[in-house]
Image (cartoon, rainbow, N blue to C red; front, side, top):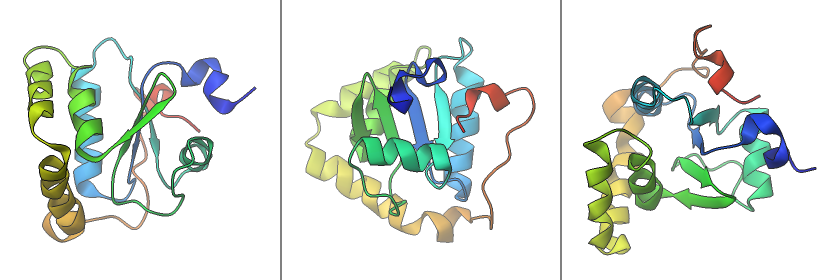
Amino acid sequence: MSQQDHPAYKGPIVLVDGVCHLCQGLTKFLIKRDRAGRLRFASLQSDAGQRLLAEGGMPLHSYNTFVLIEDGHYYTRSKAALKLARWLPFPWPLWYGLIVIPSFIRDAVYDIVARNRYRWFGKDNACMIPTKEIRERFLE
């Protein structure tokens, strides 16, 4: 049984850079708006994150993008962000309309932010520790 077949791993999974302040902010933003609790999270650096990356054939030590795993498909960069917006309440799904912009343009903008995120937003020496209230949404 693969890790994704485990019941705790059902539903969309968001893998983020656990030390990046922007990524931590994104995680908090998503948790606050996902009142149904459908989204699950893991740090790219965590054991769970590394196992999921390996299962998807993704690079294990490259943290320049977050990953959305949805129905066994792995999405990164701007496509992951736009697909993730569909899981949020109105008006956030409207952002998915930006999918009509060619991916080379969307991803170029995404890459600029990803390349500068530590400088612009900061980073920690260790991954964010989730509060007791949201801990069950994090995979380990």
